Amino acid sequence: MSTKEVPYKIYLTEDEMPKAWYNLRADMKVKPAPLMHPGTHQPLKAEELTPIFCDELVQQELDETTPFIEIPEEIRNFYKMYRPSPLVRAYCLEQKLGTPAKIYYKFEGNNTSGSHKLNSAIAQAYYAKKQGLKGVTTETGAGQWGTALSMACAYFGLDCKVYMVKVSYEQKPFRREVMRTYGASVVPSPSETTEVGKKILAEHPGTTGSLGCAISEAVEVATKNPGYRYVLGSVLNQVLLHQSVIGLETKTALDKYGIKPDIIIGCAGGGSNLGGLIAPFMGEKLRGEADYRIIAVEPASCPSFTRGTFAYDFCDTGMICPLAKMYTLGSSFIPSANHAGGLRFHGMSTTLSQLYHDGFMEATSVEQTSVFEAAEMFARIEGILPAPESSHAIRVAIDEALKCKETGEEKTIVFGLTGTGYFDLVAYQKYNDGEMSDYIPTDEEIAASVAKLPKVD
Image (cartoon, rainbow, N blue to C red; front, top):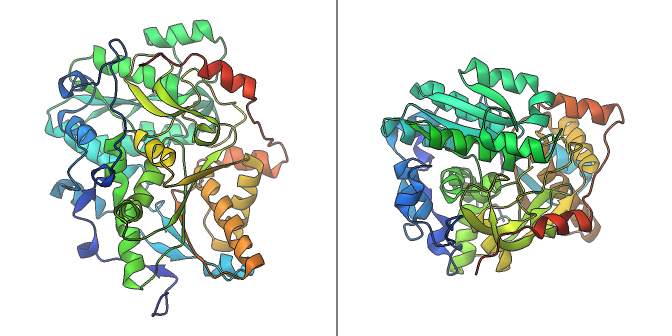
């Protein structure tokens, strides 16, 4: 219980910003299963990953024992452009809902990329520049990651090649143009520019694409062009590490006012935002120092946690990337084009998958019409137009607050507002015009995709 009056926004000073990232895996007794070679099905060694990823990022990817990894000064200086980000008390939302719950959200949309993705983009670009590389390749779904990476590459003078999921490329031309303004080349995926893209188009004519498709293309280009490496905006351990700045700042802000959250909520696609937000709180839970109810919220149209299988699977549709043990819908699963937001990846972070499997967190899925209903309510009451991804967390935060209204419990709820929705206006238009509908994959669709999982002993 807070002993001080809590302001509308809790700001930290630059001196209170994290000086080290927190490696959640160091406190996990059951570690995530190792990445496997797609051919030999043996655990990958560092030297087998360096042709794909930057050298220092490979070390971060494989590190399961170092609790804190220092943030280089160059990255901390860049963070100061937009960090620390505010922790906001949603007083207006609480009043409108008539709930005794106290609601807080960590707002990560106060930078040009419009999302939390810049936290890892600048780190990955820094290590690429430090290694002397010419450029990097990547994929992007809703476009937040591609935008963030194009900004980071422009800052360090790196070439940036982005493969953007085709349905997003077509629905979000302005997001695409921001990337191009920062110097990135943007290709709709799957495309005819890569061998794997041609193969996917031959097998799935007219496909609207998926993150799995775009990953395959980006990896192919990186491995075939000297001086390039592939970088990823979610799923990987290194990304969750960089995003821990979100949770570390959140906890510092709450501690300043003696606030202990009861419920922590984050949207879940590949795991970057959720993993970053919950990191220090989950660490306390793993060490037995505190307990929290942690909820992952995913779209009903791509429900890897709630309807997926915990197994080794390819991270990409082209089946050229390492195998990861995760909750997955199968690498051939392509979310419906009807789905308007991001959160389109078929699998989930190995770290979060293990934590979910071991019962340290729970998950729920929500349909997109109810998500946009919550987004509209939040925009009108709190004054921020939220990203569709973030709005999944908003939906469940509102639902939990309404449960408190029914029971009279004064719970403290914290959720992650990952970014703004100003590049998602086509989706908002569909909702406002009554043209948005829900699509939930059938058991048969998921079973057909899961049946193609690789056989790993």
